[in-house]
Image 1 (cartoon, rainbow, N blue to C red):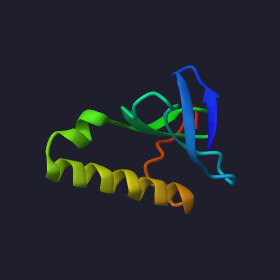
Image 2 (tube, rainbow, N blue to C red):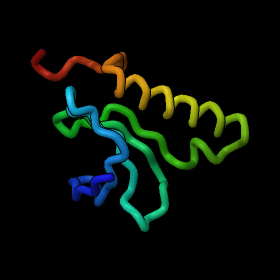
Image 3 (cartoon, rainbow, N blue to C red):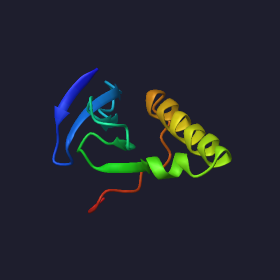
Image 4 (cartoon, rainbow, N blue to C red):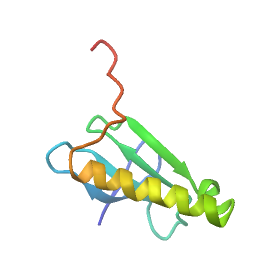
Length: 89
């Protein structure tokens, strides 16, 4: 797992799609995992989940973790559907 200093903070790259450059990132250890985010090849944040979203209730945790895992799978398979058009496109 790579660690990189970003404008956001020091982060761990949990997964990187080598074809698209999209990455799944979390805070770098030993920091607690207070978020998961997906960024595109230009370091533009496409989606962000805060730990409060998965801590509210058992049902909420299951829904949020399902969304996170589904998003990671879509990034891995190049099927990401939440890509808004970039400015000027």
